[in-house]
Each structure stands twice: as structure tokens, then as C-alpha cells.
Length: 567
Image 1 (cartoon, helix red, strand yellow):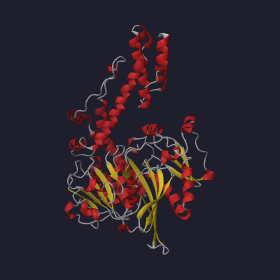
Image 2 (spheres, helix red, strand yellow):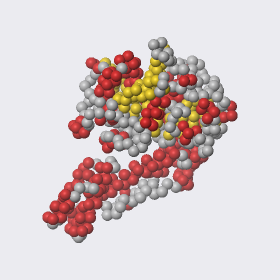
Image 3 (cartoon, one colour):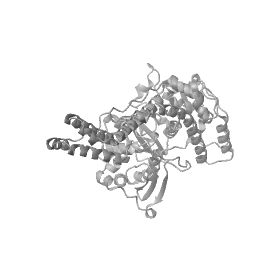
Image 4 (cartoon, one colour):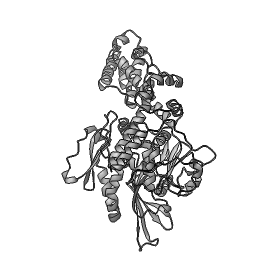
């Protein structure tokens, strides 16, 4: 997990030095772009309505459609009645066809992140700090403005903490202050996984650590940059956490109806995170409005509701989305002072308006029997006034163990699809992975199923059958397939390196040797382009082989092959 420690700038340790190649490769605003796409200020104009007043840096590009989405998603619905300061986040589709700067460098960083923190290049997050206060000098009688950070990174807690520091001061000092903030961000080191980074922001230093793929589990008790307060978010639907885990795991269409964008966005993010370390592969919108560009697509009745989690606050959605199969209605999120009472799952026909009582409205029957232990443990925590952070740690660990019990049998079976190393020949293309066969996988569950790590009873087989048809399985399997295919390519490279390629070339024609050299050069190019898991020594050894083969050829061929790039 991440951690974040604000500290006075003068007390801060010097920032960690970066490698020279990183420093040289980053141009002005590249450092900023590694963290944020841009910063927007959205205001309210009596004639125009919501409008983007400022985009910083000025060269940042947003399409008209993206600006429209940002405008509407940066303000709470009028019925929310959010007076004062409110923080929330949203997510929206990027317009296609835009080139991404720093693409290669950021892809490399992304590769080393856990799957649930990898960025999705098709979407942006918007992190909002909205202020609404009475102001008699304005025609409308209110000052209404949002400061919005647009980023591809799902670092909810980091950007929330950062906005808390800078937004109140921005509303007092305006644009010059915003320029100074962006200048600070453009001096941040890149978000390298596994490194403790020091991020200066207007006289403070934030210390953060992004988790790396190979991390052992770090204490979850630390505040994090990407996690929300899980227990607080699930309090209104306390008794249904296991059923909600199943619904998210299976990629079922879910609507969260909440009184404000803060509650809707936190609850949607909590739902998405409850299947970690699995990545939620469908779309999710922490705050969704009737003005969203996907509104018609997601509310149409001409087809089944899509696999998506929507967070909404407008009462209009109680009618528009009443055909959706699973609806979570939450009231104001506050921690219970006493043990929550048992709440039954409600029938969908009873959900008439957003004023309906909090609860889960669905006809879904869970596959697994209810785990009474976790409910008792959390209830005891409420009685003993255990801090919410500690309750969230217990709940997060529970979800983690449940997800791992579910996914380990799949990991074990998929690993068995990998060809044996002895099947890899340097003189043939790398062997293919064996096909995933649902029946073969189901047979493995009898002896090596979730019962080895979980005491939960129920229809695990039914849950797996349903999961194998879901977008989450598809996303997970594609990711594992890619990793294993790359591993096979890497093993094939190693097998080539262990051959005496110069000796081989002496026994073959010049045409065959030239063909081999070109293939080896392409192998090196592929290893670099696809970031294959190959040791640097292996790549150096292969380059040496290529050079030795070329030097053994006639001069005219040497000249041609030495000039031929790896294309």
C-alpha cells in the first residue's frame, strides 16, 4: 500500500536522487504529465451555466466533449444541497485518437505496478474540490466553483489530500497560486513503483510510496494514497458486504444511489476495491449525471443493463434506472455509535424514489453461505469503539483473503497450461499455451479448490461458472495469457543465447545466416518493445552473438548488416 506523510518543507530530507537517464529524458511539463493531465477551474455563469474558466498548463488539450463532461461532473446535482466545501471524484471516457506524450516511459512504470493500480488509457479521473458559499455581491447569491485535477492515475487518497492543502488557498489567491502549484508538480520525481518519493507542494512535503508488483504485503494500517475508508463506506449496507463482493466479482450492473457526490464516489470506489488484488475490468463511474456523454448508452431499456457500477445523486435516476437488477441506496455516511441492526435485502419493486430507505434492492441469491464471523468481529469493534481505520483493516483483510481463496485455484490451473521448459527449442518458434478448458478446471476444484484456504461453504462451482462468463475473468485471463506468452518468449531468447550460434552459421549458407541475424535483431527489438522479462546479461550476450556472426561474414555483407537497424 501507499503511505502519505505531510511534513514541513524545512524539516524534509533531501529528495531521492533520480537516475541520470530519467533526468535527461524528461522535458519541461513531462514531470507534471507523469502525474496529471491538467488542472481545471469550473465556475458557474448565469448565462452559460457551468463553464471551464481555466485550464492549466495552457497547452493542455481537452476536446469539447471532454470539457462538457468535466463541467457537469465537477458540480454536485442541485438537489444535493452541498453548502461549504465538498470533495469527490468522477471518471470519464477520453476522446479517442489523441497522442500520449511520455508514452514509453510511463508504460514502463505501469508495468511494475500491481494490476489494480495500472492506468486505463481509455479513461481519466477527475478529483474535485467544490466550494459553495453565500455571496450577496453575486447575482445568484452564491459563490460556486470547483478546482479539478484531471489524471489517468487512480491515486484517490493522494489527490484528495493534495486538494485539501491547495484548494482553500487557491480560492483566496486565484491564478498565480495555481501556476505555482503546477510548477511544484513539474518538479516531482516520476511515480516510480516501490520508491519512497518526496513531493513538494506549496511549502509542504508529501511522502508517498507507490507499491511495486513484487512487494510483499505491507501493513494495511498505514494511510494510503489509493484506498478509501472501507468500513465507513460499507456501514449503510453492513450486513450485505459478502453479497456485494459477489456482485462486483461477477461484474453485475450496480447502481449506488446516494445523497451527495462525496458519498456516491467513495462507495463506488470501495466496491471496486473490494475484489483487490483482482482488477475490476468493467467501467465504473464514481459520480454519474444525466448530462454525462454515456447517459443514453447506460440507461437505455432496449438492451440489458451493461456491466458497470454507477454512483448517482439525482432523484431522476430512481425512475430511469429502476430496471437495473441491483441497486444500493445509502443515506448520509456516518459511523454507527451502536451496533447496526440486521437489515434484509429489499425487493426492487419497493424502490420508488431516492427517498427510499437505505439498503440493497435486488433479487440476487448469493452463491456462498453468509460469513457470520466477519459480521460479529465488526459489530464487536463498534461496541468497543474500535477506530474506523482498524475496522477498515479488518474488512480489507477479509475481502483480500476471500478473493485470494477464490483466485488461487484459477492461478494454479492456468499455470499448468504453460508448456514445459524442455519443449522450448532455439530453432523453432516458442510453443503455444494450452487452451483454457472449463471442464478441466472444474475437475481440479475437488482436490485443489477454495476449501484449502477458506472455511466458507456454498456453491463455489456455481460462482466459478458465473465468473468465467464475466468481464473480470476475461480481463484477468488476458493479462495472465500475456504474461505467460512473454515468459515463453523470454525463455526462447535464453535458449538461443545458450547455443553456439557462430558455429551454427559456419555450417549454413550465407542466405540462412543473414536470415538468422535479422531474426535475432528482431528478437532484441521485441524484448525492448514488449518489456520481456529477460535479464540484461542475456540481451548483451545475444548482441555479442549477433556481432560475432556478422564479423565472420564477407565484408560486403558485414557493411549491410551493421547498417541494418532492428526494424
